[in-house]
Length: 257
Image 1 (tube, rainbow, N blue to C red):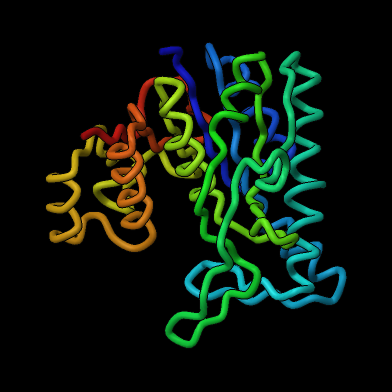
Image 2: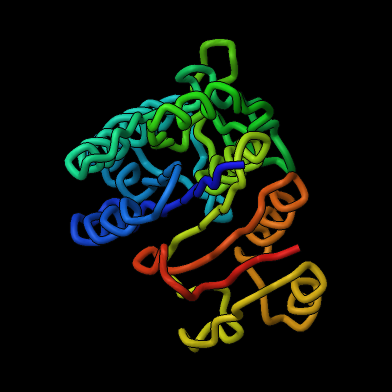
């Protein structure tokens, strides 16, 4: 099997010109086949504010009503996505920007109301069209995937970028030897949240459960790692959590079976 790297990068990185430039230079230097999945939440919040649309968040998740759905579709699928595609083309990478609706690559179900919380037009991924993606990739095209899916009934749905990356990696594991990289603002999973250099270099499932019991791993890192182990179980070869400015280099946290 050919090797493929799926990289998820947060909105904070792609929304600043200097950090985006550094990240894309590193992304282009990664050898072999690759896919990029991006966020863009801060841009969506800023554009919504300019349009007089208030943003509402619950536990870090955006409530997406009809007005906000228009904003995130424009910002994620347009402004952020096409800027990245253009920058990659300038670097000689033949990139193609995609939402889940394009070529039906990711279909979702609208998230049901739970515990009294209605997230609105938010999608939970149900189906990934890996054959179409694999065909594009095998032709030398680099998919750049926005955090948007569709329900197959004509509706776009706002979908968490980590989830897009995970589901894409899992689906493509049928075709390639997949490494999934989550790149963000920390050097990796930290043993001590106050110490940037306390990176846990390797974690397996037993160690993860122990770290959670001991309170070393907590908060938003718990679901991120739970999702990582699900991806491993689904055939993804390796998962790395690292600094966006360090992708392709040694370091970070490697999650193993």
